[in-house]
Image: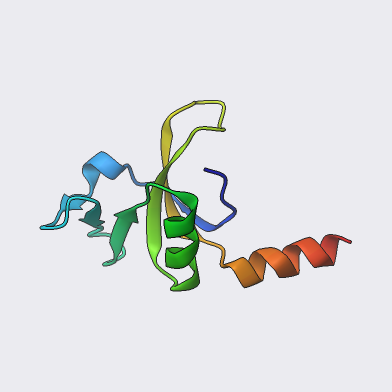
Length: 85
């Protein structure tokens, strides 16, 4: 998945606290839940809700790396794109 991040979290998925929901973990540092996304639609929906996410970044130099953080919303990405025109 490709995602522009508003904030890239330095934490590792494996270090977050497990919850009753298998793809949701809790971060003791920021006090937020982090949802592991399995597709781009889920990632975009959570971004628009201002939720923290985790996802496999298959396009990075370190293929398969799990990225965590707060993604940019669709509106922010569009504004960024039009500002560059």
